[in-house]
Image (cartoon, rainbow, N blue to C red; front, side, top):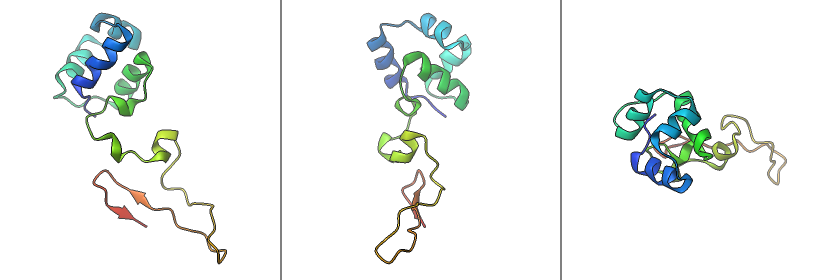
Length: 107
């Protein structure tokens, strides 16, 4: 995962937090912070999660991809692959559609 360095700067400014404070609060290495600042190196999901937790934001706010691609289930933490328990008028279960990051729809 890549962190958007501009978004990182904005979130740190809102929290009035320096890189040293972020490193200490998130319990990550200086190299992790450097990689996040550059936005050119992939970070592990754990590292992104630790940085997001230190900034008290959802990890999706940091990741370098359009936030519009995140489904409501992903925001709430629900699994996208679970079948929907909703039923249509005929009493049949509806299949839940799953979107991938390229906006293709699978049924």
